[in-house]
Amino acid sequence: MNQANKNDKSRRKFLQKLGVAGASAVAGSALLLQGCSDSNKSSGNKVKVLTADNKLVEVDVAHLKPGDKIQDLSYLQERGREGIPGKKFVMVVDLAKCKNARKCMKACQSAHQLKPEMHHLNVLEMEDPVRDTSYWMPKTCQHCDNPPCVSVCPVDATFKRQDGIVLIDNERCIGCRFCVAACPYSARTFNWTEPKNSEEFAEVTYDMELNVPQKKGTVTKCAFSADRVREGKLPYCVSACPNGVYYFGDQNEDLVTNGTTKKTVRLSALLDNNAAYTLMPELGTKPSVYYLPPRESKG
Ligand code: SF4
Ligand code: SF4
Image (cartoon, rainbow, N blue to C red; front, top):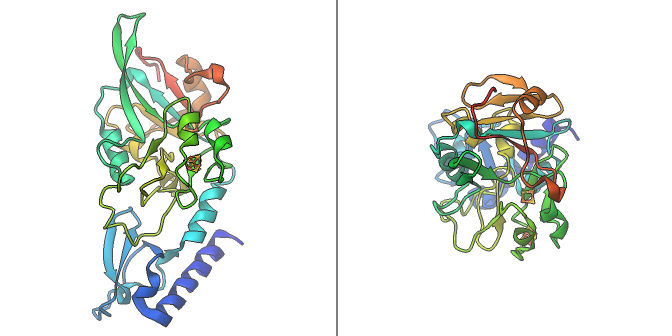
C-alpha cells in the first residue's frame, strides 16, 4: 500500500469514528492538523491535536475538514518502524564552532516534551590535554549501525530502521533499562516521573518519530528528529544552532547541510578534509555521528 493510500485509509477510519460516536471516540487518535474548516458552526466536541509544526491545540471537531491528515497509533507505529527508503541519515558536529550556546538543547527539550533536567542532547565540557584547554562537545545518540542497545531489548521496543535511525516505541517499552546499560555513549535516559505537561498531552496519540507524548516508566532518547526529516527538514537541534556546529544529511547522497548557513557540502570531503572521527570506534558500534576536531575548521 503506498503512502497516500495509507493516509486516506487512516483518515476514513477516523472520520467513521467521528460519525458514529462523536469526539469521545477519538480519544486515542491523533491528528496532524493541516488546517481547519472556516465554518463558524461548532459542535461543542473538542479534541486535542498536534499541528503540522507540532504545537498542541484544542479544536472543535466541526472545524476539521476532509483534507486534514489523520493518523492513528497503528499507522504511526508501522510508519515509524519502516523509516524512509533509500536514505542513510548522518550528522556531523564541528567542535571548533561550538560556543556552548545550548540553543540546540532547548529546541530538543521543547520539541520532545522534556523537563529541563532531561536530555536527548547534552553539551559537555571536555578537556583537551594536547592544547591544554577545554572545548564544548554536543553529544547525542550516535545512531549506531551496530547498536548494542537494540540487541538487548527483550520486547523489540527499540530498533534500527532502514534509514539508519534508531528509535524507541514507548508503547512497547517495559522499562527494564537493559538498553540504558548497554549503550556505551550514555545516550538513553529514563522517565522516572510524569513528563512535563503530561495532562496536556494525555489524549495525544504517541508518535515514535516525534517521540511524544513521553511516558513515565519508559526510556527515551534522541530520534534524529525523525518527524522532521520525513518532511525533508533539518532536525530541531541542527536548525536551532546559531554557530554553524551541525551538519545533517544523507550518506547515500554524500551530501550534508549546515543548519546555520544552510550550505550543502559533500559529506566525504567534509570528513576527509577535517580529520573527522567517531566516538569509541574500537567498540565496533559504527556511529552515524561524526565529529570534526576542536580546532579551526576548514569546513
Ligand atoms: S548511541 Fe547508544 S542508544 Fe544510540 S544507537 Fe548507539 S548504543 Fe544505541
Ligand atoms: S527499557 Fe524499553 S527499550 Fe530499553 S531494553 Fe527495556 S523494553 Fe527495550
